[in-house]
Amino acid sequence: MTFEKTYEVQKNNRLIITLPDRFKSKKRVKVIIEDVDESRQEKMELLKKASKDPLFLSDINEITSDFVDSDNEGL
Image (cartoon, rainbow, N blue to C red; front, side):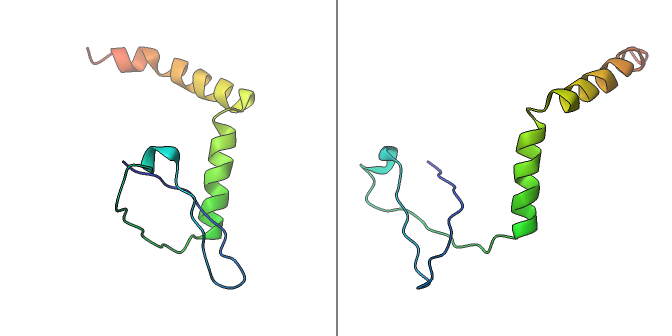
């Protein structure tokens, strides 16, 4: 079972992690601390927003439909 979430480090350099309920029966977990590249995190958030943006989705659908015929040419 995997759980991933980005946390803010507190001023005292401590981190408090509240595990989801599905971990209640677990006796041990593995914690890996990884420095988060802020620009990468921002890009990920923008990608999440884009996946719901109607104009972006319309563009993707248009491009996909442009290649439907060419994709079938090799069959």
